[in-house]
Image (tube, rainbow, N blue to C red; front, side, top):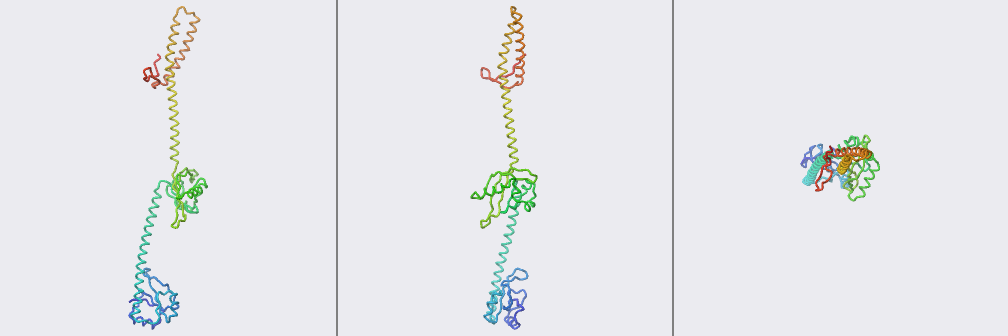
Length: 342
């Protein structure tokens, strides 16, 4: 059996151990030393850093056992047992060390695997956050920025590294009170989440950006608050679209009002035109009377002139609404407003 023999061992004890069939080897799986006055860790590591190394001490009397255990030995041998008993005890410690080594190696593999999975998950999460088209930000309990994705960089004009190193949550909101309001809103819910909360953010160039915030608290395994994360929906395009829709709606209403006014004017012109034509015809017949006094004839001429002015105004009004449906005839069919006055 290969063992490591510490220089602290007396020469006669070293000779006896070799006589018991042990082989001295710097790479042995058990370290033997003189227990008193030589503190050693109970579990050392080999130079490669992989194998646990049990430390076994030799003592001259039972009174030195406690001191050797306190010095770090996993076992203390008093006196000189038989070679068989010595090898049995050393073999047991070597078996325990090998079992411990396998467990440690398995634990290290699991830890490396877990670290790799964590790194992969963190990378995936980071890529997902950066790929999100909406600004995403997270702050710790002191309000310091932890997460600042690319959409937030684009929307607010701050570099992510600068935001993490220099910015506070109150620097992000246009109104510093909004940060406290968001936190109050979250704590007022059982889930620690809020949705569709209207706030304004402050861009680097001073613009106040209207957004809709959805935020949630992040807790550790013990339930302690460690951060808050928020996703912001930029409302500028929606508000611009709404303004355009409102303006278009107003224009349509105004156009409909103008069309209604034109239609009404056309109907009015149509209604005036017929009695006006009849009236002008009647006056012409009167003017043709040879017995009509000159004074009356002159008045009829002036009346005809005024009626002609009215006819021209009606004609212009009719031309404005030419081609539009303006009324119904007696049979209920739509009639054209404009009629040729010539």
